[in-house]
Length: 476
Image 1 (cartoon, helix red, strand yellow):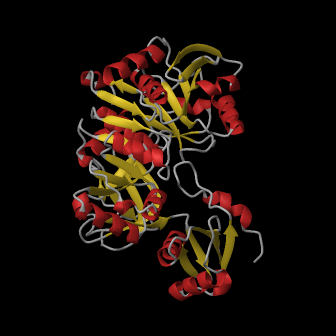
Image 2 (cartoon, rainbow, N blue to C red; image 1 turned 120 degrees about the vertical axis):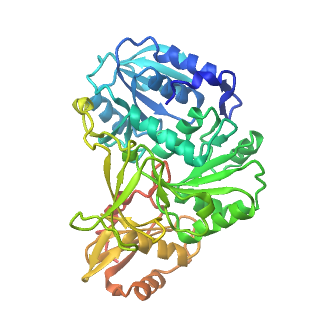
Image 3 (cartoon, rainbow, N blue to C red; image 1 turned 90 degrees about the vertical axis):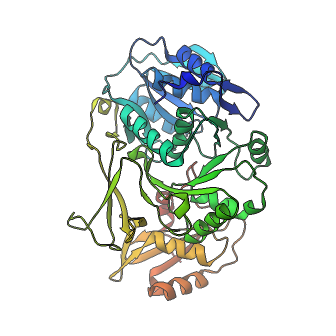
């Protein structure tokens, strides 16, 4: 994937929000200085930030066939310590200010605000095809890691470049952490295409983000649904973003109203809006909605990426061929990852999926071959004999009550609706119950509305539903 990036020579590869820049030649040279003289193939923990130092360590490790695990630099210290003991990496590539947290290691190299630490752990036996490890959510300290191969990365990167029609004139700005599969795919594709990546950890609500965006003429950005909810509140549609060419969305289903709104903005302003679908278990992307169909098919996740294909399975695992019948979405492609690891020993494992991924998502296909996500297989409840889709319930509430932040969870015969009170909430519990009862026919006794100060989200903006479970035993 990164084997030929040296051909881009003195073209700008990376621009950091502190003004620092790096060419492709410099990126290759720095990556080789960090990992080029490591004789044995080793496991490396990289504590990621959206910075030149972080990207150098990642690109250098992949090019030199070292195996990195990408983690957030802000990961809880206890969770990080747990992973360190479980996987025993040989090296750490960490921000300079974090070095004191690893007193047992030996500093062997420093550059661009990052430090390479030799932990003293020897190299571990790993499958030859293994290239990269990511956590399943992008931010947790779970020992369950996704094992990605060189073929996975190369295949998915090429497919994304093809359907987005990326070239070396692009300038993508980071809106997501690079340890999150979606954020990483943006870096992968633009570096592979010889484009520039604008690196920042500033958020969309910060003035400095938009100053950096305009100063360096960003041509694209990506975001999860939460990103677009924020943009909608920021009066994004009134901004002067003349150099913006396209926007991408993944990381969960965007509400139909927002999908339509951003598709209309793109159409009216000569830009592209591309909705995508993916999982870490499929490297990054599995589907995309072509921008010229974005408004016509709003609400759809689109069609399979180049060299991929989908099937829908019924409850007996038979293939559904008729349109508009819901089934489990199953994907086939070279980007389907090898499997999971839950300890150091698992890094020796080979390909356990063989190109097929049962996504766990429920979907349907229309007569034109476009797919629509209905919800997660595990996000359905039985309530008084009725099947309730929690994702759809959540979307209904957000669509009806403007600017309301909520999340739905629960157990059979009991739907919990969590309402964020941070910033104020003008909607009463009774109003919400009345609305959902009327829309779904559910008895209001099955609905429990709980106020929480803030809906818990990971660093990519995705709701952490398991964190809400602790509120479920609280009475009305």
